[in-house]
Length: 402
Image 1 (cartoon, helix red, strand yellow):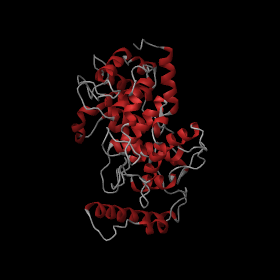
Image 2 (spheres, rainbow, N blue to C red):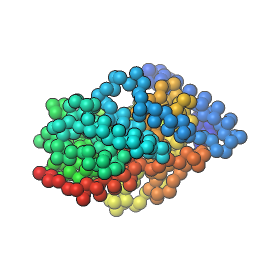
Image 3 (cartoon, rainbow, N blue to C red):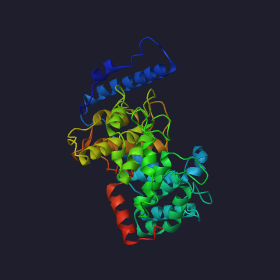
Image 4 (tube, helix red, strand yellow):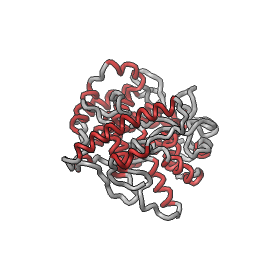
């Protein structure tokens, strides 16, 4: 796909063709396209008199995120078991916007996450809750974003390593918690935190790469576990985990690329998570981050280096900035959906990837120059230098990995 600012006339002819067979799927797709086309047409009229459109309302988003960090709305009570996730989503989004809170607030965050750390290792969804690989990943990422000695020292790596061994299965897969379900998210989260905290060992992840590859489907994407349907979040976890293990040669990268490029929607410009599903802002990262990983795989595999971007960066940025910004701050799944912390984080992450995730390292920013965000590491979804800082710190403070 070429990277250029699309005009309404460019995309109006790309509307979904139901081939005269209406279904719930096709009806929903046509409805979404109709709303998005209307928004793009209205935007084009405004942009004709203002060359700095579209514009990211970064100050509004930052103000809202900081308020969420201190006092969540009552609607978030249902996420009581996901509190480290909420912390990570908010801090990461603020980092992308160059708007992290002050040191006192960050120190309070460290103290809260310490209360979420289970005595047997790992982090639970809140104080006194059982450890879970998902919330462990979120807590470690959040602490790496803060990146102070206090943050690093708060992690009990000895017990964390014991927790990883406790949720590992003999086939190399990982359960999300003791006695819990095994899927590709568990493997990715375990590998990511092990790498960041320098508790990784080949023995701990013996057979894990082979198990992950067994999750790649006939479509080319990755499923949550063998035999299931390919999905954007699982595909990210799969290829990222293999890249962290340096075992990407085991999977069919060409098939993965073919599957991924077909997930970018022709009219909307954003990504869907699965075949025949609707566009969703969060897949801006889950699908979008796969492309720089694939480019790196191609360059390492002695294939011809990919000189062009493998997805339409401009179209994705347009969808996010024009269609996914809530007027009161925060970002959304698609027009008509409410704002939330999850979509604010991953939609901004996807916007950063669209701006910086090129094979040649040049940034490509749609609209106002002020739209440019900080870059993210596609394998961990925190800043590249924060990954380096954490790894360097824990390399100097090694522990026994047996």
